[in-house]
Length: 408
Image (tube, rainbow, N blue to C red; front, side, top):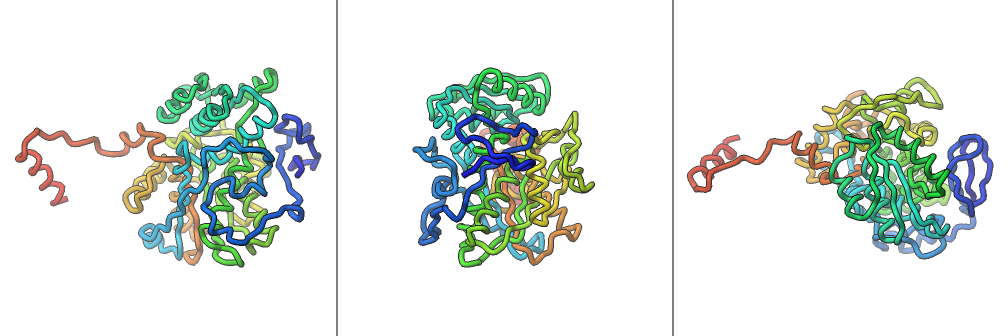
């Protein structure tokens, strides 16, 4: 196992705490897969969870775990028929312990912090990272420091961080401001940074790819999805999932890598802009805006990894409006019973747009990743839905209202 810069190839000492190279390039953990003992015998019979794949994870000791992973992969036949698509699946990461995909990364990141003897964990967050880090810090007996953009984080996520003992600071700025601040704090104070610039965290998130293959029973070159669609905020998840598929390909578990497709909100879409213009670097947005607060990021730190993942897999990047996101959120709930926060629904909204454009072929097998649970953002639900109907406490009033329901 090596810790290497994706830009210059420099190898870094695994025993040190480092997240970026001296050339400012992002780091990635790379394995000599010829030395990995990863038996396929009865692999699909083992219940899925992150540590099922520990041969491909960079932790040697006992992990800090809350039994994360093992999230459902739903076949969505009603949406499939509406889209005119061959097969459509939703990988619902909101079913993790804290309600988001971040738990996959935190179990590995916090386990690494424990191996290094760290005492204080830190992150900037749009909400889900803070909730997940706080809970895993509590499990590990560590302290947690969180910086949030003031006024732009859903209360459900703040509540999780507070309840599990994190020190939560609301920064009068956006997520990108908070990230710059926390990076300096960690550098000067020796705290352990657990944003997605941390390469160990992304190792946990790549298990989304492993589980998807297992759940589709894709061994022996079976049913590998043609395309995987991911909401993109700080851009770590799409690059991590791509890395997982690549490693399974290099191990000859699958014979191809799905087209990685990243979806951003239209007013928070620097990666989409860079992709469409053929750029290798993004032009950061000073004031990103979207109702999907989890992806309201104007300067995604993992943009170089994400752009490479999309291009190397022959995927695409696309943006969707807040209205398209909210419609997809309602349709996931009302057509398939899958409750997600707004950012999660960007994957379905993006799929619909790409089908309409002719970018997605209707014969494709598609997996949409939904990243967070509906209850993460109850305020957005109340704004998007009709409030409860008040009725008098008598049968006449009740039946009058029910009759209206039956007629509608």
